[in-house]
Length: 125
Image (cartoon, rainbow, N blue to C red; front, side, top):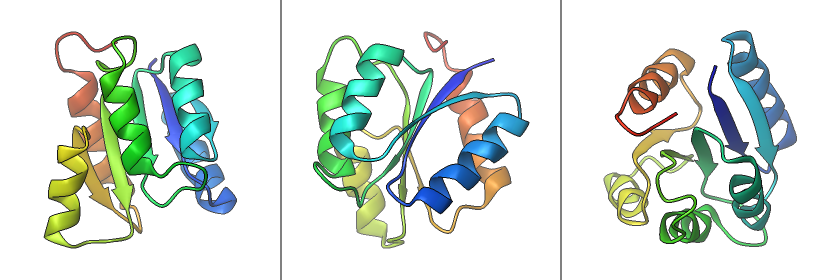
């Protein structure tokens, strides 16, 4: 099964999402900030990344840009997660390199549908 990197600075949210993904059969690795996310993505090579935007050290916007600028990680699909539900936030997240966007609080089944769709793209996994 696919490996998903969950990037979330809120411990309760990160752990809850990781547990739900693991129950679905995904392997999960985690990062607590944007810098850690870039490092983990470069070493673990996950199949997909769930990237929160409001992160310490470097934010999710910058972490996404760095991952998409790196030839070793640019192919990894990134679903950007944000508590901001403004239309502009979605556009900005996609412009930063996100492959999809979802709002918080997370509705799990629609998120799983997005994950499944992105992992089914040619060249992923």
